[in-house]
Image (cartoon, rainbow, N blue to C red; front, side, top):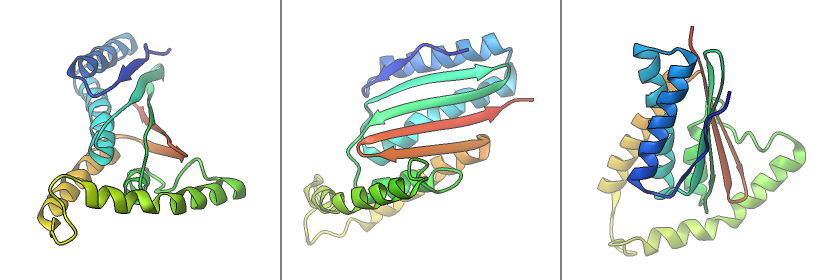
Amino acid sequence: MRSYEIQLVNREKELRGVFKETERAAEIAGLIGREKLQLLLLAEETISMLRSITGEINACFWIVWEGKDFQIHLNARQKLGNEQRGQLIRSSTSQTNDAAKTFLGKLRDAFEQAMSIQRDISNYYSASGVSRSADPSDEIIQKEKWDEYERSILLSVADNVSISIRGGFVEMVISKKFA
């Protein structure tokens, strides 16, 4: 079965829709108690992780399931710098870009990384309150610890986290099979 698709554009109303749709999918599949909470946690952490890494979210969310075998999908159009790409890829189970499987895919991925270096530099210096002489290390350390915490929750609860990045398109698929 497949849930309704929910378009996310940084609004609380849309997040409530995600939770309602996730609860509906859990109820249809017969999940109760801890299993239902784990599915809700996976949906929340998937969205939260993408938002914390990219700073915004413009994505489409849906769930596909058969019996008690679930896949949470989140597809987003995002402009990513190398640091953001790296954080997303490190969040996957394989720690690789699943869109770069073939030789040409790996070549395209390397080219996209090279093209995003300037975006990393521009984002760093144009961020509010950051100047070339400022040392934002305290904020970075705290943010990195929080990002790592979200990643660890997602990876410990999910059976598999697959992340594919091609150009400005990010596809996340989180798989979980309940007994």
